[in-house]
Image (cartoon, rainbow, N blue to C red):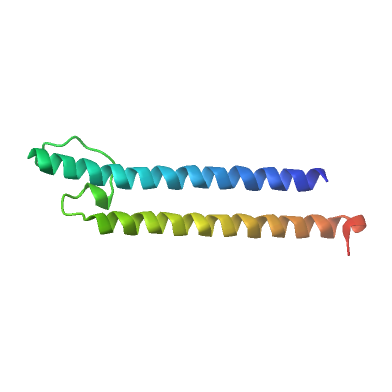
Length: 105
């Protein structure tokens, strides 16, 4: 039972960490786009703008569609991360069951 709880804890921790990273990336994509549009509207060139995060959204030529594609990619990668975490947890549980004769079917 303790191994199951540890597996669940590890899976939850990995999922939250992945989600935080993906949300941060989405935030940077959107804020980079909004910042570039605001600078453009104020008449500032990219050379005058303070450096931000490296992303396609920093480019003044970026469109909202580029940002949406980036957000969609981050969501897809988060889904992939979750599936990998689930697979890892299942594999760990299978190894735990093989090592414990009381848990075999």
